[in-house]
View 1 (cartoon, rainbow, N blue to C red):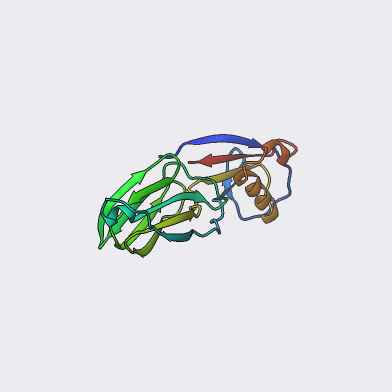
View 2: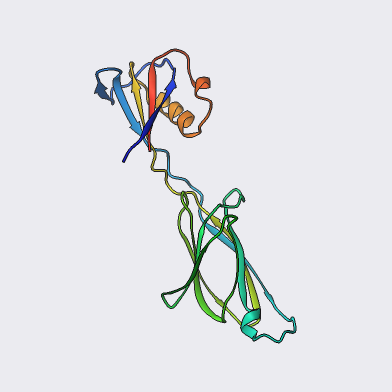
Length: 188
């Protein structure tokens, strides 16, 4: 289901001939934001736990970490899962993106998912009395937003590129233009 709202942009540009025709504004141009170029990553460090305890060694074996975006900000409510031999061990979702769980020594796949980000999975092995800390950075996913420019004049490729940067960058739209020449619609 698509929902839309109207954002009025007022620009006055000369045109090009590769647009659809619309009765109200005459030309309709459609675009999606460019695909993000950031990539997911993980930074790992581990430590050997030498604390003397009466618990089994498994209690001293754990994983911990956080899920952040590529700017280093915590991602709210990511889903973090631990699998072993294609079987789900656990999944958690926390508001701050942090996790800290005991695990048995062995081989695992740690995955992280969040709305608006690409899924991430990492295979690792952990030994007894070890804690592994994961700093997971998720990459931004491709936006599903679609924009339409309804224009009374033909627009050049440069005009469309400028309008796209303004719309996708969520800049102050009134800084983009001059007179009432076109309307930009965003469909979600």
